[in-house]
Length: 159
Image (cartoon, rainbow, N blue to C red; front, side):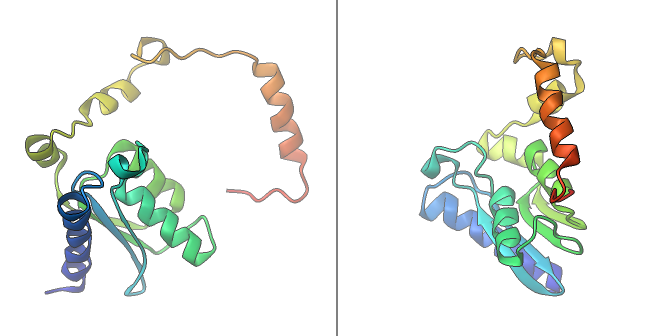
């Protein structure tokens, strides 16, 4: 077994435990590795925590960032038991993840678990005024005033 397969096997084991032993959420597990060492792990706990954002990848990123003391994970690899959803892909980009390996596809998750991300992919491609969730802008000037003060803040941490 290669190192990549070893780390993926751990992600799959996490998915099995959370879904079939704990019944905490769907069959999703994730591991983050840098320089050959696991720096973060996570499993889906959407049901147990009543939190729709508690995906395995999000939990693994939070775990790794907390342990590393940084909100960036350059050089890190994400191993996930299933193809990441749009939210988790965005989080991987924000965290600076360098590579992603996944086991099952979005189609597999739909076929065997009834997890369907296709609507989200379709929605984000639409102009804001055509999405299912209404979105409109209000109080822009007031928000910009806060942005201006933030821009001038001497101890601001850029990211």
